[in-house]
Length: 351
Image (cartoon, rainbow, N blue to C red; front, side, top):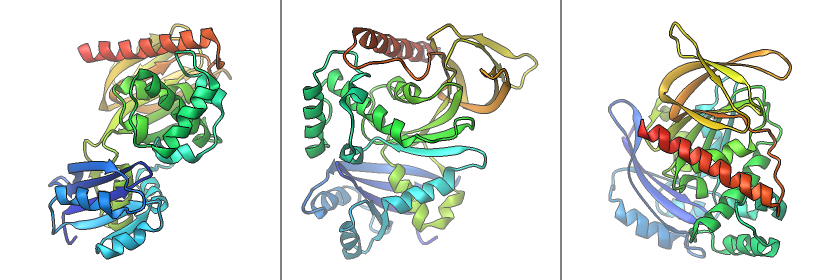
């Protein structure tokens, strides 16, 4: 490998992000430095030049990733390799996907704003009453200024609600009988003030009797990692650093029922879930656990799972969630669920 340091430039719809990454002695890819600016539309090089100047590493290989085709000319001019977002995503699938499992990359970035949406699909996840025209105008303005950050919790809720709707469409048609690995990145997810908020976004859209392992990219580095994998095949054998966090196993039961957790010890841990309960069972990322529960078809299902920053997240709410836009009861239960999972996270942190 000609160099152990790499500069990646990710030019997205809202933000341009530059990273200095390197391989450490354990063959782990770590992020040493990062910087970002709003994407300079009309002249992509303005933001790029400013950011690269902050990361002085002239000997490092340079790779640019973007969905804008005109960025390829910019990369050639700067003697950098160019990778499309599609190529980066394909490389990530090759790296993460295991046989017998589903794998999904859920990107909450500004590119989702180009998609059509239904106001009621967004508004039903809010804890406050919102006018349909207000929601349409808010998301419409976001399309033109996607780099603007939420000014308050209300705006954050709208962005999270929009992400739910977008993610649900991306997961459509999956095989829910298989465990899935989901890697989330970008937008309101990577920038979340608490992991529990990001967790609730995913829990809300999972079906009953569905189990997923979740990875969380807080540093917005995932597209850059995919670009590095696409150009440097040697990195397929590397491991990822702290920029990608294992959140743990999310178990959407769909109803209250007992489960068993086999930690590899002499006794099993039995957990009885109450109706509508969300709870966290602490477990480190390296902890392997065998989860067992009885399906609605009266079959015993056993799944191998791992822990993570949130451990094992158990959800006994009825799925799909019975929510309706404009209904006070929907706003009440959304408030209750958010408080419940945030309190569970705070309690876990205390121990």
